[in-house]
Each structure stands twice: as C-alpha cells, then as structure tokens.
Image (tube, rainbow, N blue to C red; front, side, top):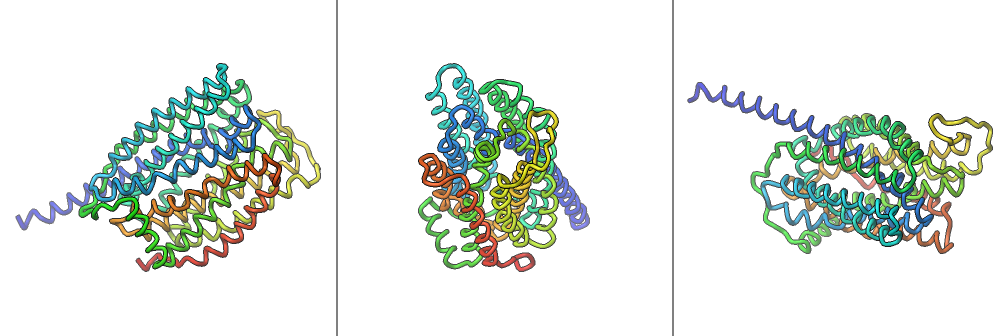
Length: 443
C-alpha cells in the first residue's frame, strides 16, 4: 500500500486539476452567454427605452431601474440562511435557473400584450414579472458566487471575472450593432423588444445550463444554520468590529448613487441632445468600454489587489457626470453620419458617448474590485451571509432611481441635477476608498 500511495496521490492531484480546469472553462462560457443576455436586456439601455418609448415617463424609467436593483438585493440574506449550513449549494442555483427561464418567458408574453391592445394592464404585468425575474436573479447569485469562489479561489476571482466579461462584451460588441440596433430600428415597438427578449432568453438559458455542469467543491464542515435576524445581527457586529467591512458598506451605498446616471442616459440624451433610437449604439459602446477594461482590471486585481481597482473606479465615477453635463454646451463643430443608423455624430454627442465610456470603465473596475475584495476577505464558512448582508442592508438605496424619476416628473429638479449628484458621489467614493486596507498577502 505504501508503494501505491504516491501514485494514488498523484492521480488524485491530476484529477483535481482537471476538474478545476473544466470548471474554469465552464465558468468562462457561462459568463460569455449570461453577460451577452444581460446586455441584450440591459435595464438601463434597452428596457428603459422600451418603457420610455411606450410611456414617455421618467418616473417609470426610474421605477424600472429601481425594481431591477431591488429584486437582486432583497432576497439575498434569506437565501444565505437557506444554503449556508448545507454541503451542496449548487442545487439552489439550478432551481433558481429553472425559475428564471419560466419568468423570462412570461416577461416576453407581457411585452407581446403591450402591443395587443392591453395597454396599462400589460405594462403593470411587465413590471411585476420583471421584478420577480430579478428576484430570482438575486436568489441565484448567492450560490453562484459561493460555488465560484470555491472553484476558482478568492485571490484569482478578479482575473477570472475579467476574462468572463471580456468574452461577454466581445460578443456583445458584435451582436449589438448587427442584431440589437437593426431590430430596434427596423421593427416596430413593442415587437422589436419582444424579439430581443426571446433572443436573450435563449442566450441566458444556455449560459445558466452550462454552469449547472460545474463540479462543486463542497463545504466539508458547514457552519450551523442562522436565521435572517441572526444573520443581520452578525453582520452589524462585523460592521462595528472590522474596518474593511465598514468601508465596503459605505462603498456599496455610494455605488447606488454613482449608478444614478446610467438609469437616465436615455432620457438625458433625448431631452438634452435630441438623439433617439440609439440604444443599440449605446449598448455596443459601453460593451466596448467594458471589453477594453475587463482584462486590465482583472490583471490589476490579481497583481496589485482590489483596492487599486476601486480607486480607479471612483475617479472615473466622478469624471463621467462632468462629461455628460458639458456635452449639451459644446459647439457643433462637425457633423458625421454614423453607419447603419440615422444618427449624426457631432461634438456634443461625442462628449456624451465619452461620458458613457467612462461609466463603463468605472462600472467594470468597481464590479471586479468589489467582488474580489468581498470574496477575498469573507470567512469561508460564512461567505454567503458575508456577501448577502452588504446587499440586503443597502436594499433601500435601490429606490434612488425611482425617487429621482419622481422628482423629475413633478419638476422638483431636472435631469442635470441627477448628474451633479452622481459627480459629488464619485468624489466621496474616491475619499471613502481610503477606508479600506489592502488584504492581499495578509490573509
């Protein structure tokens, strides 16, 4: 037996390495398809255009974005209490994926009904089903990130996420101008949005199915179960006790304010610059920004740590509203017809597109930096509740786009105010990032 042990250990190591490689590539495929589907149904650039085209309401545009974020946030602490004490957590991801497929198909049905004479009631049904779909997304995210951290390793998450988003955005850059923009331009609303929803259903469904074949690294000794109230109490104790966790909570709050501009890029472009029907161009452009920056931020995260990613994100979050606010005041020094569209590019629109690119760079750096920092500092046994607490307690912040849309609708302040607030928040985010202490090499 002693002579065979080294061979057995070597075989076990080869098997383990093969499993990790297989999981890594399945994770990349999942990221490519899931990110493509999420971009096709971007709540800020595509579904906001759907709501705005049919209603012309800034309030409903804000409501859509609030429901999108709220749905992802509020069920997470409950989901963490369901899975944290279990060895097998992936099965909850599988169940949530089935629910998501059903709800996305129902959402396509509500979009069809908006064009079939059902008007207001169809739009109400759309909002209800979309909120349920995003809630299922939130439920799936907790087992997803836990399985991912156990498969890839917390210190390699940044690079892995960079590669996932690079693939997803590379495909989106092709699909957006060749599929999304032609569908939006050539097909009458709401049929064009119905077609995009069905395409997204097929693409995302494939991505979710791929991840179901990942081999989970099960928790050997899972901790005892904690209920929702106990998980919240433990989270607040951690906030008081740990400087990094406190800093992450502050950054999570400010991130919602930084994201306000994204919810109103379509209305601001229509009202201040007079550009309509270019959701596909916006989608392609921000995908390009994410594509270019994904590998950069992933490399920064792996090599230099996640705090540096967050510093870059904060600086760009402060810059992007400034460029957007300046755009309508710039002179029309040139006029160029953009290929495949009826849109003409001038200096104001160019500045606005630069602003959108800055937001894409910032969003990608923030996503990779925050996710990597959270997974790297989270205790292995309590990783689900560690992540879920930060999202759940900032749940009220998800209604900021709704509040902003309502205030704009009643004339309390204009779209410009949203961008000014986001600019100030970006500066505060940069300052707050210094609350964090880089943990790379110390854990």
